[in-house]
Length: 457
Image 1 (cartoon, rainbow, N blue to C red):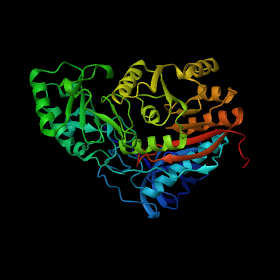
Image 2 (spheres, rainbow, N blue to C red):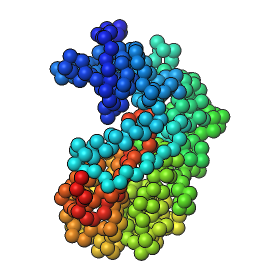
Image 3 (cartoon, one colour):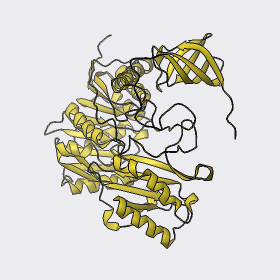
Image 4 (spheres, one colour):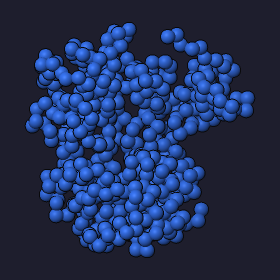
C-alpha cells in the first residue's frame, strides 16, 4: 500500500519547549504544533501527520538551527520516519537533558494536577544508559515481503514490527541474538504461529527466553530450540497459552533467575513472566534509596502496599521489626512468601492478598491490630495509583511517621499527593526522579511524606 503524502511546511518553525512525551512544541498560525524529534530552541521544517482545529502533530524533516541538547543516536534503527523503531523516543536528546526533562515533567504534574510542591528536590537516581533493558516482550512476525521473520519492537505509531538487527538498550548478549532469533523462528515448521519472545535477564547475566507458540511444536521444532538455547546460552521457556502456562523446558531452571539486593543480602527468585523492573541496576539503587528514606527503626512496624514479589518488603525486613506486604495477586503473594523463606525472613516478613483499590479505614484498622501500630508505609502502585489508600491515610487520626510513595505515573502520583496534602494534613518533604527507562519519556519517581501542615509557597 502506497504511503499517503503528508503536507510539508517549508517555513521554519521555532520550537519553544518539550511536551510530556518529548515532542517539540511550537506555534504556527495560532495553532499549537507538536513535532516529533524537535528540541527547544531549534528552527525546523516538518511534515504534518495530524491536523486538528486547535493543534497539529508533525515529524521533523530538517533542522535549520540545532539545539545544544541534541545528541547523536546510538541505535541505527532510531529515527522519526516510517519504519523507525518505537522502542525509544529520546535518543536524540543529551543524557543530562533527558534527566532534566523528566524532573520538569514530575514537578509540573505535581503542581498543575495536585497543587503540591515538594519542600526539597531529591537528586536524580541514575544508572546505565545502554544495555539496561533486562525485561522485554519482542514481537515476532512473518513478513514475506521483508525477507521472512522479524523480531523486535513495534515501529513508531504502528503495529508493524521494526526491521531490527541490533538493539543497544538490550543487554549485549540479547542484542547480538536478534539476527539468529530471526533465523531460528524462520526455521520452525510454523513460524507464523510464534507471535512473541519474552526475555528476562538477571543482573548476573543469566538469560531466559520465553517462546509463545499458538500451535504445538513438533519434535524437530523443540530440538532446534534446545540446540539454540545451548549454543546461545539462554534458558528455554515455552508458553502455549497465557502467561501462567509458561514453563522451563529444563525444570531445574525454574528458579534460576534472581533479583538481587546486595546491600541487604537478599535474593528473590523470579520467573520470566513475573513482574520485575526492566532495569535491575536501577531497581537495586531504588530499593536502597527507599529504605534509606523510609528510615525504619529496629522496632518499626512497616506496611508495604502493592508489594509484588517482595521487592521492597524483604529489604525492609532486614531493618525493621515487622513488615507486612500487601498485594492484589494471590499468585504473587505466594511467590513473595517463598522469597521470605529463601532469605530466612519468614519470621519478620508476612504477606497478604488484598484488593488495594477498595482499601478502607476498616481495613487499615484491622491491619494495625494484626501487626501492631504501623509507623512506616511504602506504596509502589501500578499506573492507576493508590487513590483509595491515599484517602485512608488522609482520614486516619493515627498517622504513620513516614510514607514513601514510589510512582511510575506522575499524574496519578500528583492526584494521590493532593489527597494526602490537602485533605489529610501531610507534607511532601522530598520528591525526585529515578531514570529507570533512559531514552524514553517514562518517568519513575519517589516522594517522601510526613504528617504535618504543608509549608505555604
